[in-house]
Length: 55
Length: 209
Image (cartoon, rainbow over all chains, first blue to last red; front, side):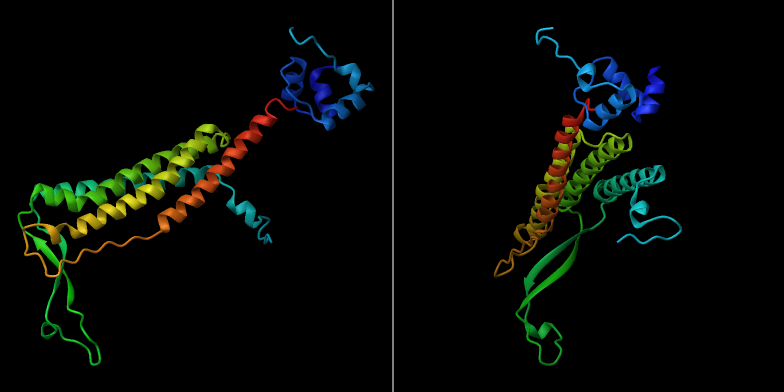
């Protein structure tokens, strides 16, 4: 699935999806997270991971 | 409640369009140019042409010099508008000072408003710079307004205390103050505070997806 297709399916702008993809997002709405999980049929934990603080 | 006429609500009519921004900038330009014209150019031209200087003189006169309506009494104080020939530079400067000050303040406020309008039109109204601009406008309107009134009072009383005319007995000095600039300053400062909170909220949601 392309980023554009995902943006259309989720209802989030392509710009915002790019921000998330490039790790530039500082916060995420529950509604955005839920919508992505519903489209990708996954759980939030599969999208998020905790990186070491010093990296 | 919004009234709907031809599909547009009252709120829709208040939304700034491109032409509204342009019109506001033009109005600001006219205000700035007008203040320069009347505040600076007028007194300079009068000085160059040696036009008699209009001043207000307060003196006491006898009641026989004044025709009074029936039942009215006269307290003896009279305000006279005089035209001073060959006014000195100092006298001209004193009389022109309030208008010059007002012109300088008007130009500064117009410039600050212009900056505010420009960033708002660009979709970036909630910036720390704009908070500074709004607070600056508030201070200029409030304190500058008081200063203009003060210099106006000094100019009004200048002829009373100068040696050009006999000092009236008793010497009456008058100065009127209106609190309107201070009230307007508080209102503008409140808008500035709203913008400051807007800046904080904007920073909070920066990077939110």
